[in-house]
Length: 219
Image (cartoon, rainbow, N blue to C red; front, side):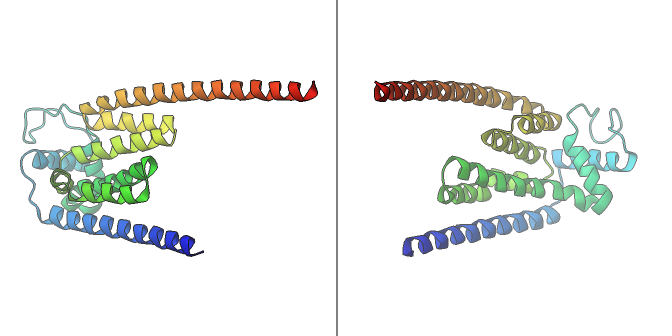
């Protein structure tokens, strides 16, 4: 009973720590994102999102800061959706919201592969990683891509191949680098195929052993 109570307390503690880390990281990112003035690529993405939100079409040669818009538009379409609800503030919310999804998925992936304690440490690492924090508060496309890659990996771990394919497709609609997730899917498929093959072999061996055992008893 005492050991069970201790285990339950540990589980509860891990759950509280996890929630607190996610909450603090998310609130901090939201505050920094809202007080930050977009510049460089972030300002350009914001202009594109604003244009899509106002005109309901993807730009091409319009004068929006660069000669032409020729890249996957998922980030800008997402920003346009939030722009039509919250204005410019809505575009600033895209990266922090994506970062919250990344934190949740990093925790779930780590818990799936290891244990809750290790998952909490993985969450802490991701929450305080400088590059992760920077990309979470600026209007760059990387955080949405990270979210979709994590979602693909978690779907694969849960053997949801179709869902993994959908997330991979969305990653390609966000950045061309999304294609790099295909080798991960292929490796997972080959590993799973080999695992299933070995499981079938073991089943056949067990069946044969049972048959031999029954014959010996019968004799």
